[in-house]
Amino acid sequence: LLAIEGSDGVRRGATLTPVVCPDRVLVRDRTGLVTRLLSPSRAWRLGLEQPRGVLVVGVLAAGPGAEVGVQTGDVLTHVGLAGGAAQAINSPGELASLLRGLPPRAEISITVSRGGRAFRGRLRVK
Image (cartoon, rainbow, N blue to C red; front, top):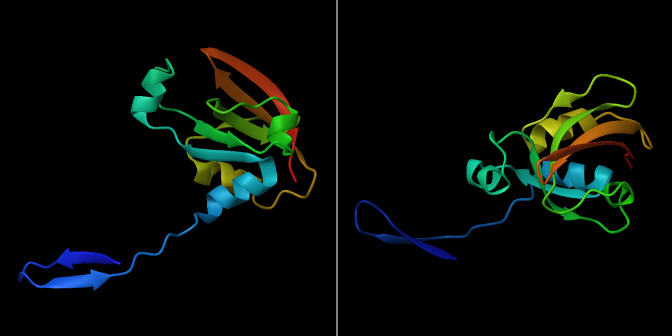
């Protein structure tokens, strides 16, 4: 319960309910990666000139991301169907849009930035 004081000076109660972001759940369930929007300050701390990509803040031990070596702190910059053109991603929502509709066990190509270097690989989604 949260107390909020209105402009009329009257205190009112409000109940806040946490909402799970469906895009982040889709990304986690299909790739085994927990992602967040890459903020400009975090990009700067990682040595990136521009805040482009999606920050990996968690990797599920038995997930596809862990199988290919993605680590917490990596920045996922490009994703595409394996064998096709990869496109730049800038939010968990963009990543979820790419994953939505893919059949189980589809293979995607990914580009990950880590320590100023780019790594490419293939990941089989769930």
